[in-house]
Length: 457
Ligand SMILES: *Cc1c(COP(=O)(O)O)cnc(C)c1O
Image 1 (tube, helix red, strand yellow):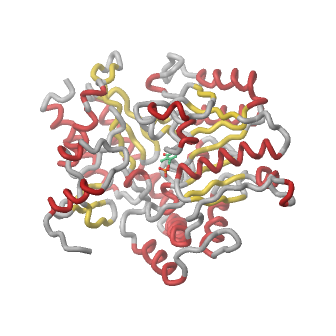
Image 2 (tube, rainbow, N blue to C red):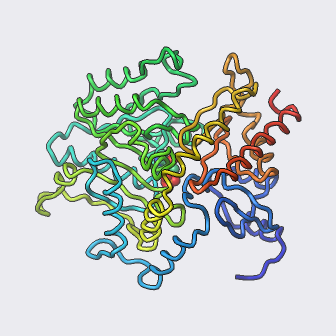
Image 3 (spheres, protein in one colour):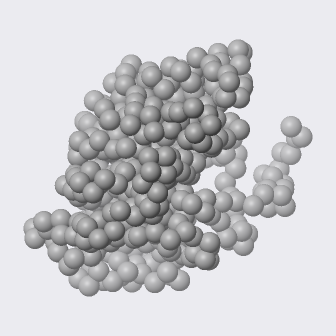
C-alpha cells in the first residue's frame, strides 16, 4: 500500500475514485466519510483513533462482533486449503457442512440449499424457482407475485419490482415487472385505521380478496417476516404472518420469506419465521449468514420444489441460474464458524436476557414529544420522529432530520444512520449489558442535545 499519512489526502483520493452506495456524492464534501482503520467487538476505530459503536451492525450483517478470533481462524484455515472453486461439477466440504447446518436449524419444511452471493440474488433465486416450478408442473398461468407495498427485497430489477416504490427506486419503476401490491401491516399508521386494542388483523383482507380472485395466476407471495426492515423497522404481529401463511397454503401460492435481514437471531429467534411457526416454501438468507465477514447468499427450499426440477436433462426442467462466486469456500467457512459460535456462546439464550433490557431502554423514548412511535423486537429497535405527536405529522423530507441525528450521533460515538425520519438500532448480538447501557445513554444525550438546539421544533 502506498503511504499516504495525511487523512485529508485519503479523503481526497476516495472522492476522486469512489462512488458510494446510497449516497448523494455531493453530500460527502460537507459530511466527510470516515476512514475506518480497524474494528473490534462492537467498536469501529477511525484513523484518528476515535471509536464508534457499530449500532447498525455494519448494515445489518455483523453478528458476533468485529475481529472475532474464532471466525478469523476459520477463514484463515480455509484460505490455506482452497480459496475458491466453481460449484458446478465440483464440491467442497464447507459448502456441504454449511448446507447441513442450515437445514438443521431452518423451519422443517426446508430441505435443500441453493447458494449465491448476496441478499438480492438470494431473493431472485427464490422468485425464479417459484416461477419455474409452476412452468415445470404444467400450471403455466401462475406467473405473478404478490408483495407488501412497503417491503424491501433488494436492488436488482427483479427484487425492486417487488419492493415498495419510494424515493430510492421511483426512477426505475418503468423497468419493473407487473405484480400485485398489498397494504403493509404498518401498525403505527394502520392502513385500516385501527389501533393496538381494536386490531383483529383486518389488513389481511386485501390479500384474501386478491387470492380469491387471482390465485390461478399467482406464483408466490413474498414478505419479510415480523419486521419490514428497510421501510423503517416496522414490527408487525405474528398473527399477520400466520394468516399470510394460511392463505398461501389455502390458495396454493408459494410462501417466500425474505429473512435476509431478520435471519440469524436478530429478532430473538434464529429465524423470524419461528415467531409464527410458519413453514415457508422458500427462505432467503444473506447479511448475517457469515456473521458479517464475507458475502454469501442462500435460498432454502422444500423437497417438493426441488423434485419438480428433477428430471432427464432433455425434459428442460433444469434450473439454469448461477453466480460465479456461488458457495465461496471462505464465506462458507465463516458461516460455519458463526453457526458454531451460536452454540458455543449460547447466543440466543444470552440475547433473550439482553433484549428485555433493550426493550426497557426503548420504552424510555415514549415520553419525548418528537417521538411518535417506539417499536422493537429482539435487538432491533426504531423511533419514528414526528413534528406533531397528536396528529402523527411527519417532518418534511427536506428538513433532513435524520441526517441531523446521524451527525450528532457520530459526535457521541454512535452510528445512527437514519431511514428517513426513523432512527433505529440494529445491534450486533454480542452486545453486553454494560455496552447496551452506554449506547442508550449516548442516544438519549444525542436527542437532548438536538432538542436543546431546537432541531425538533
Ligand atoms: C438488504 C436486504 C436485501 C438485499 O440484500 P443485498 O445483499 O444488499 O443485495 C434483501 N432483502 C432484505 C429484507 C434486505 O434487508
